[in-house]
Image 1 (tube, protein in one colour):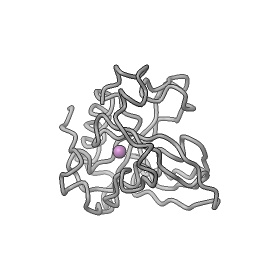
Image 2 (image 1 turned 180 degrees about the horizontal axis):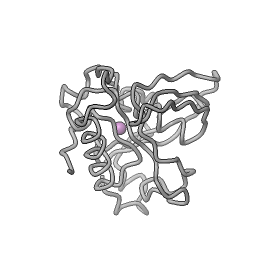
Image 3 (image 1 turned 90 degrees about the vertical axis):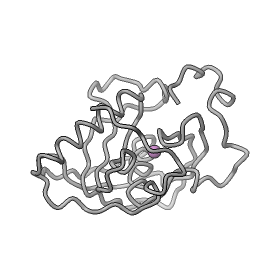
Length: 180
Ligand code: NI
């Protein structure tokens, strides 16, 4: 079911979310279904449970078709479709990369955000199977962005240079038909 996405200013987006205790709970599978429905309806690259008002440490991101490109991020490398529960991120380098980000909770805007260039992330999927990946580039950026939501952090809180923060249709006129 497509859920309403909370928007910046809603205090629920600023709260730290709780760890999932029961991976097998049917409510958890339903939550993940709702998150995919909601993310796909909005053409998002990822979504975190608190964005639909559920304060649990669950994020989803990526695409089932490995050749798919998100229309909102046409130049990005494909990211495998992933359900990540109770994630842990380790930073693998001190190198910081800048890149444009948007967020379904901050519609219509984009900003340049500095992120760690290479990370390892771990967690479990909906079957309780371990996920353990070392990634860089856009994949690393998406994971850091989504996991930030679990700690109540929205990307504008990480923008350093506000001369590179603005309305998507002004910054990128060729993307004027983007959903947010
Ligand atoms: Ni976001």
